[in-house]
Image 1 (tube, rainbow, N blue to C red):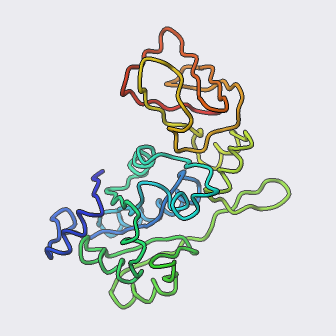
Image 2: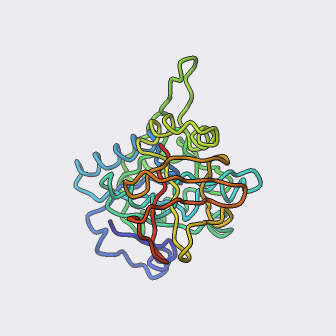
Image 3: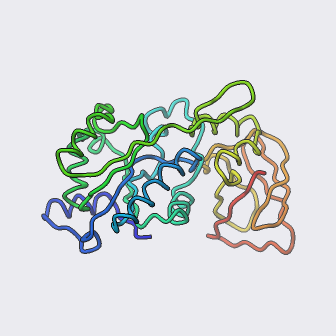
Length: 267
């Protein structure tokens, strides 16, 4: 999977340049895709399958951090996935490329139609797939009907995928990143695994030779304080979460060094 930075895409537009990578055209889906949960997977599977039919590339435009971390930072409880995890998940789903945006005031001020036109000009976008309630552009002013109008007038195919719901036995709940975040904070890991179609995992990077990791360095949603039996590289490992730290009780056979990255899987 090829990865582009949004700043690079903007430079291409300024120079009236379309990379040869996009010569056959592409389909794109835009979003934070924090998780990825079942709803995201349905959308991206739709994207990949239709792009294959039309023999064009499939790609996503996503963000370094999920947008709620920027827009609702005061009460935000953490990401479900790191950028590194999301990129791996995109690739596993068959996505051909990802454009990563570092969300800032300049990007936030873009009008939705202007943004879509930039994707047409820079990436030869011929197809777009989104969730039915997707909005983009300045203050989310560009909704599904506006995107359909733009697509129809620019000979761009489109699909809008319906929301996916979870039946919890008493009622149906729309699957969303915020809903999954709430159940992780209640220790409902098997339920989270069902909705994510993978175990919920914290990505940790070794900073030194110790196995104590300050919570303040972790941007993901951290489960409540307590002791957990987790999987780390396939080995069942004792993990303690305190008010300030995550402490891993590695066995002698588990060797990690400064800079190593591993996942703590909560199942």
